[in-house]
Length: 92
Image 1 (cartoon, rainbow, N blue to C red):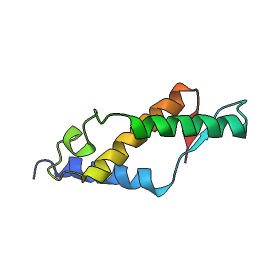
Image 2 (image 1 turned 90 degrees about the vertical axis):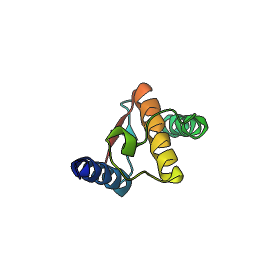
Image 3 (image 1 turned 30 degrees about the vertical axis):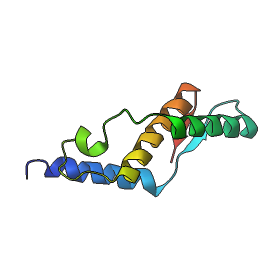
């Protein structure tokens, strides 16, 4: 069970990411512009191709995620990168 520590870390990260959603903040941004940017990034995430490895393969875990879990992980990464690229910082 050489991959057990990685599996535990992956599961802990997944649980942490799902426990509280990020609140995106950018100095000087209005609520309207924040919402527009969030919607644009969400659309980008929903339409992005699945190209990144899933957490299970990235950390060597032996238990694979379901297709839905893998896609949700991918969308979250794209959304986070998009918002960060627009100058937002996320807080829990």
